[in-house]
Amino acid sequence: YRIIVTITITMAAKIKLNLLLSSQPADFVAHIGGIYEKTPWIVEKFYNDNLSPTLDPAVVAATKDRISNVKILFDEIKHFINEGGRERQLELLKSHPDLCLKLDPPSSEKSIDASDTSSSGAITQESRQEQGRAGLSTLTSDERIKFHELNNKYKAKFQFPFILAVRNASKYTVLSALEGRVNSSIEEEIACALSQVDKIAWMRLLAKVDYAEGNNGHGGFLTCHVLDTANGTPASGMRIELYRYEDDGPERNGIRTQQRILIKSFVTNSDGRLNGPALAGTDFCEGQYEWVFYVGDYFAKYSLSRISGTPFLDVVPLRFGLDDPTEHYHVPLLASPWSYSTYRGS
Image (cartoon, rainbow, N blue to C red; front, side, top):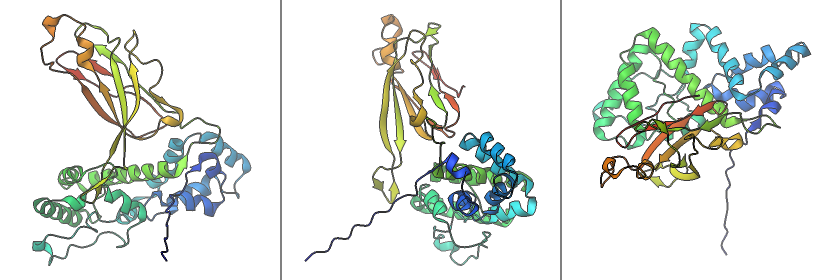
């Protein structure tokens, strides 16, 4: 006989914003109390001041009307960190795990006692998942030595662990940020670390809270406009593709790779724009995306004297990130046969 055991791990479903705002105190904290590392008092304070059943019903109703999307909710919650005072801010910073927790020190440093500036050696599930995506386990020997030297210097100087919103960062991002920030002043680094804590909390909140029932998404959308700078006209008839990167590709060297997925294909209209948003409603969500502009095909329509046998610019990829699903992101392209530029518009 053969017994087959199947284990299914289900990620906690997102809660609708309106249902969250109507939750009882314990349920509210259980849903989002962990967005700030081991510091549920921030979410508890927000709830007690705005949604508690002990408040005037008119105050609670006004809060629910005012918080129409997840960004407004987050802005109001993070406000309590600024009001908490320096002592509580430092407690919050020290509650974060050291990025070195899962990284063995180089052999030359195994006897060095680098003080643990975090309040606890335990690491939350959220932090474990976020750090796992940074690829620190793939550090080379030289990179590992550099990382530990900088990290020990940082902790000795600031007395709290180095904090970086690493969900979409690589090991190179982490090393670069650590190298740059270790020379900051105390006040500069406290402000920078708190901003990173807010970024982490924002990403966690988005993973836990969905748009309100009856809404078609969070309200944000993506648009594009292509301008032909060589001829001073809109780039009409240019073919464009939009891709999304998903964190569910195959593992390589213990690191989960990204999968590039085609979302839509477009052709610009007479004004060089798309006929409506490229992404909107429930399709518009935070993540990493890529425009692919077929610039060479477009400029082939013009005089052959202006196009070489092998075009200098043929296909132009433009990778970008969407961080806030409540906002309008306008990501245009200004192009000639020899150059291109972009920016984030609105």
